[in-house]
Amino acid sequence: MTNEKKGYMEKVNFGDLPVGKNEDVEFSEELADEADKKAEQRAAAADARAQNEQGV
Image 1 (spheres, helix red, strand yellow):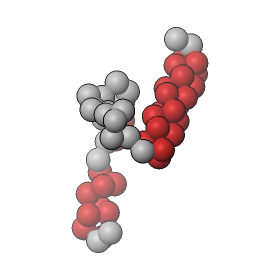
Image 2 (cartoon, one colour):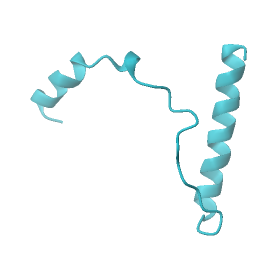
Image 3 (spheres, one colour):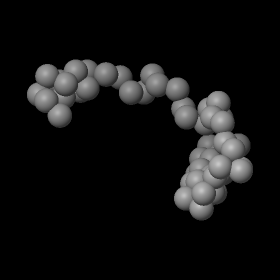
């Protein structure tokens, strides 16, 4: 990363970014490989942990 880009990134307020839950992502069960299926399971588990931490 260049110093110019690093300086810009330090000024970005990442707290204003949206939370990446329930994003509109297409998932094709027919085209999914084992890595895709494991990633889907990890994402579901992460969502469940995040909801539990928020007391939802």
